[in-house]
Length: 358
Image (cartoon, rainbow, N blue to C red; front, side, top):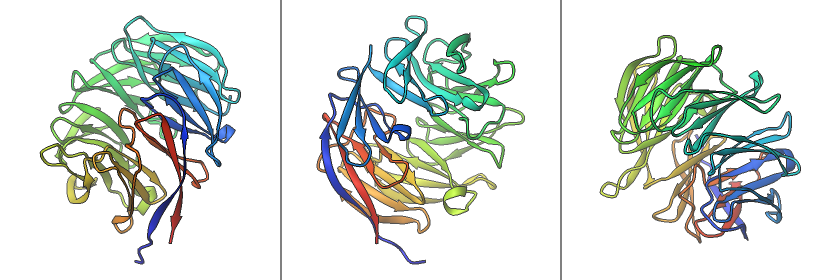
């Protein structure tokens, strides 16, 4: 196939506020980019075409994680004070809050808006069940593991269950959506950080960062069916069906100080094995797909690489003028149109780019 060169044209850098910037998201319903400024408990609002700062949302505590429901124009925002703020997403005004027990540390959320539900994962205190019609906290599902950090599936791939990653106890709590109770706790590898759902294979994949493996869990039985070595410090995973037509699962490994080269482990989901390890870059921290192109950040070299999943291989790179943010769930986002990419930096700025393909 013909390999197209991909490039990013830097359009500008805008001051947003004090770091860390834990998340940067496209608020597509208002044509804005929202940037968390945890240093002063605010969100900077940027025009998603010009990059101009158009507003600020002031909060009671530092923001951590967001879910946007554009059907009701509602934003749910996890804060560092054991609360979830509820915002009118169009005006940016705080309209309410959900309070959790002191020290419970809400950390992430799973949206099931089609079922009028939002599930709030807390690090220490179980899972909160929110009715999104009334924005009422209905109950707390008691934890069966320690250190919940992430969960799947989200609203676009329901399977009747929620799979919650418990980083401290090295297991996964399974919640039945119908009764909203934990029905199983599944041991996995050491240091689980992320999971994803393979709807075709009816499998949950868990990335275990500390022992360099992926755990496969059968959705029907909630039992571990395979543990696959993939490389140093895996975290991010992606099912490639929509990108390349392949049934493979890609897992990004982040390397180590002693062995800094990160890779993409290409997992054959039928044979349950790594069929190829694609070299990536030095100590990759995050990736983001836009079509078949995956954008990968290397903070140690200040490079942003463009990797074409169809080749596969690097088809472009740009040297960053500023150190990218690393203390975050994701340092970059695209606008809904894909015409702009915004990257949060480790200082008080965001740089924005125009992607081009030649």
